Length: 315
Image (cartoon, rainbow, N blue to C red; front, side, top):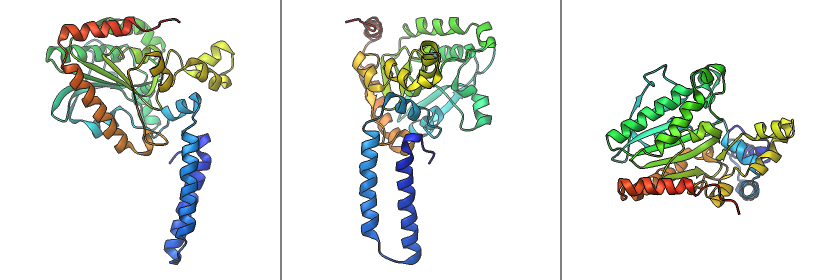
C-alpha cells in the first residue's frame, strides 16, 4: 500500500503487526495478546488520523494513485459495458470514457474521466485531462442516451480540462460552454458523482446533473490548491492554506448546497476497500435513479433549472 506522508505512522504500525504475525506463524509461538494490543492501537490511530483530516489531506487522498478510477467502478458496479468512441469531428479522447451499460437490469449511459495507473497509461489518458473532443464526445453520448430514453451516470475525476495550445485551437472553452447549455436541457435523469478530483471547468463540463454526489474524500473546486496558491501567494507551497480557503471538501460543498449527497468511504479512503466502496456507491446510484425516474420530463427539467439557479447565494 502506497502511503501518504500523514499516513506513515499507520503504515509503519501495519507493517509491524504483519511482521509479528509472520514471526508467530514461523516460530509457532503464542503472542496473540501482543498482536491484539497493537491492533487496538492501530484502530485508535486510524480513527484519530482519518477522523480529523484537513482539506489538504483530503485532496491528497483524492489523488491517491491506487484510488479506484472510472473504469474500475464500471467493472465493479455495471454489467454489459459497451464503450463508444469519437466525437465525429476530430478524434477519440482517451481521457473521457463513454458507453452503454446496465446497473442491475437498468440500461444506462455511463460517462467519466479516466486517469492512468502508470506513465504509459497516463500519457494515453492525458492524466485525466480531456480535450475539446472529449467534451464533444460526452455530449454526443448524452444526446444518444436521450434519444433512447436512457438515464445518464457521470463519474468526474479530473484535475481540469487540458490547457494546451491544441486544445485551445480546437475550442476548449466553447466545447465546455456548449455542454453546460445542452446538459441543462437533456430530458433524461442525470446523476453525476465526483469520485476523485473535481477540477474547474474540466469537471463542470460533464457536471450539470439532477443529482450531484461526491465521495467523502473527493474534492470539487474552481481551481486546484496549487494553482490558487500560485496566484494568491506566488508560492505553490501554500497549497494546504489554499485548500482550506477554497472550501473544496465534501463537507463544505454539502453545506453550501453545491452537492446533494456525500457518499461515505471506507476508513482511509476508497482505495482501502474498493469493493465495499463500489457496493455502497451502487446502492446510492440506484436510489437516486429510482427517485428521478419517477418524475416526468418537464418536472425533471424544471427542478434541474431551479437547482442551478439557487447556487451562489450570498448571505
